[in-house]
Length: 279
Ligand code: A2P
Image 1 (spheres, rainbow, N blue to C red):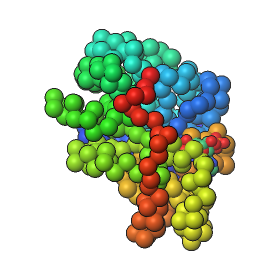
Image 2: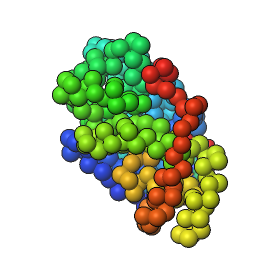
Image 3: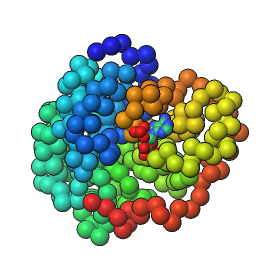
Image 4: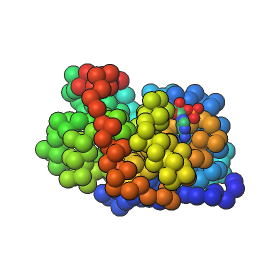
């Protein structure tokens, strides 16, 4: 294990647990790639690793974690479970199975991966996670891809997730759900924060800011997330891009730059709709 050049700062969740403000997304890595990339990322200074039952790479993530030599308690590991486990008992089984695949005795954050409202059991799933929290098998609990209406069902029972991980980038500003997070003290975690490195990274507003700050377009987009308090989890399997993504703190976008990037928000008919899509 080498001495990392930089570590991401942390945000404090509603229950006092510290979560790094940037992490590594691992979809669509397989076990072998996840093992290599996770070990490398931890060596660089990443301290948040995001996986899921559905990614089928939890074994690789656990392997990379052990190979890195970074002490377990210094790493924030997130996983998520599929809809077949949406019951109080099912969630205990899902968590045990994830822990076994990861080779860990707790995870830092467990998420309901998709609400699957047609099945209508995500409230029970959340109640199952409350038990896991009490049992010390997870340090924090949250949701993923929940819209306001899904979160409201939890709020009505006095339940508040620590984190809601959603598809969010400058093209998908998600201001409606982010506002709800702000009101309830829920940390917003952004998946595909770089827009999968497509047209977004060629946007003039982003390239102009990159030029002014002597940064890459991806670093500007990640800073747009972190300046708003979002926790982005960019996926990269490339050593240089991994390092650049981690090194995206240490400069400040002006209000004008932030506004110009936020103005890229648009309706995307192809965006996955969590009232319809889920697994
Ligand atoms: P690679 O793994 O070859 O780096 P997102 O997290 O928004 O879904 O984006 C993931 C995609 O973006 C991957 O294809 C990844 O490819 C690419 N990517 C990750 N970091 C960067 C970066 N700093 N610059 C350009 N592309 C990146």
